[in-house]
Image 1 (cartoon, rainbow over the protein chains, first blue to last red):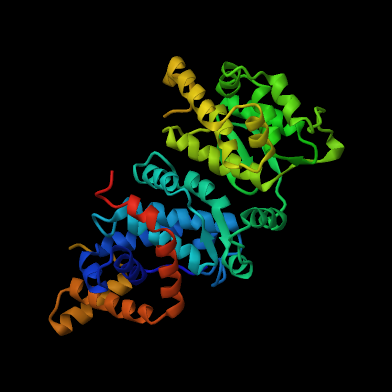
Image 2 (image 1 turned 90 degrees about the vertical axis):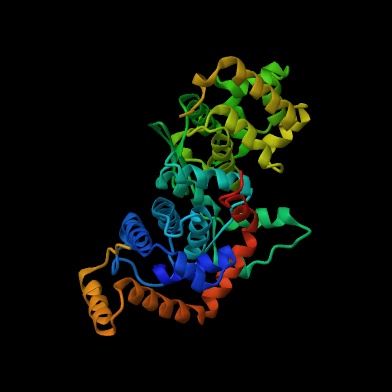
Length: 331
Length: 68
């Protein structure tokens, strides 16, 4: 692992803030910078212990996300450049990931800014930020070798899905689910129940359509929002159609989630929840997240049912307003 | 300014500061400035930094301390 030192932070701050390195050095709180670098190294775990990990790129995605999030968290806590804490922390975190062989995709920026501010305010732990960051990391070598055809983004998505490491999603009896690709994802009880149903409905592969079927097959704001729009569970099942409604057998093994399903679970739904000021994903977050994967079977089924995103978002907002703040994972 | 340094590093800095008649803080900043200059010549580091800043400009603008 290649670490950043205090001098690196000065260079990064100067470039980020558009000031000379001399000016950046003048603004530097040396004690805070050293404290941040030391804390990040400790928080990164074994990979951050000198001698425990070989120098050079970090080969493990989760370890890279953990170390990058730890650095950002430490810089946000100690603020070695007073007045520019969040910008410098993010730029340093991105640079750390880059020199260790990873590129972060942080779009949409508003969602990423919410996460950063959550970490800065202490509402979001470094581990949660790492879980959010993990699926957004792409090996730099992979990015360089494959050039995205500008006119065919769908091809890029399919290529990434094909090449992505095979990953299973394993629900656990905890306030969230744990995935091998993303680590822990915080979920409310109803969201866990719907995800558990999706997992059982999936055959060898868990796609966005299974997430939708899980949502309409369990109680929660998502199912109630669709019902409010006159869309019952049976209508959804008919549209999804191709899915086999049979319990998964042990012989079939654990289903593997598609890239789209993983992004819905660990990226888009978490963004919806954070954007609402919640720490845990609820069923409505999962439902709204399905629209972010427009090519997915779930989004297409919802479109055919006349359940456009704006209508569903409106129904969700109305239900949440009626039920009050206690229903969701706020806090 | 109060510095929290490794004892060995603090001792070296204090020795240099004493010999040159300057504060430990000044010596520390000069040492960091030398390291910054060395890193500035690292073309890969600078290229990655420029790429990152260009790609995430909207996010960084959102995080400006004077932004809502």
